[in-house]
Image: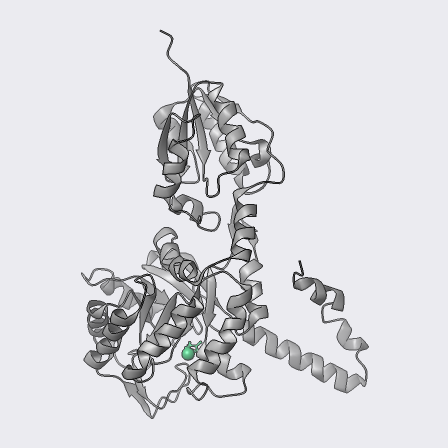
Length: 434
Ligand code: SPV
Ligand code: MG
């Protein structure tokens, strides 16, 4: 009996549609179809993580009649699977000749050459893709529960999760929609940071907890209404332990994915202020009790508790920070934010070197406000999984608005300001209306 030829198809398959079936049907005409199903990590390396996780996607694909076998494809590149299987054919829609997958395609052609394999490229099925369907569904109905869980999934499938400060719905929409293509990858922010500093500044208040949680969550809900990405909430020190369950209930109900709570007590002062008199660090065990309280009261285990250590901010050393990290981790923190206001990341890197070896290691979070020169690749190298750009959008908007106001005053008319601001037409089309 003649052995069937081997046909390899690499797929992500988040939302199955007729485009996939067309490809698989075509592939099955050439032989036995082996699907290299991209893992969540492989997908996250070049676009947003899939709605369905690997296991669920595998169940779907292996039940399609054109498919003989499903194996994981751990990277965007097909090469290691191809070398393993040495298929006679690879089948992929012709859409990858352009755009982010161009390089992947070239590598496939090079690999196939080694055993005279062939690339088959059926015409791409127009006007349909998982991303299109997914965006549409997300827009219509992202449930708070699904949104809460997304941060944990991102952390486990990406090498670093990028969060940017958002202080209103419009900044939320920038984070939601902005995409930048760089080195064959689509880069985007993964979520929003609800900052106590920029929330307070937006309301003309100092960052000293005078703006209540309920006022902040009420504004936050406006942003939640028009966005789908995960939100990390800056809760200062969480307030009184007895009040925490109510705060957590509100946050989860809104769809927030994580709370960050700092281990300071006394009158709240922003950590980047030089003068920290009046604030001190909480006793580690008392702060651990707050963490335990949240663990007990949260509805979903996917709602993350991120403990923020202020030892470096208050002039204490590495040992104090490490001791606290272990206590907070044991108490149930899902991640640790080690804060610093140094100009370089050396302080947080010295912490990371030790903590990554601890048996209580948890993913690390960085807020590179003062040490903004640090590259994400160096954070990744040191075990950081989350980077929060904590205030940049407000810092960008404020001088732009002030300059425009000044220009109008100086010129006694608005014409000169027009040159530096976007046309009204663009503002109108910024917001979708369908
Ligand atoms: C915030 O953005 O409010 C923060 C980060 O808590 S920091 O300003 O560095 O304290
Ligand atoms: Mg803050």
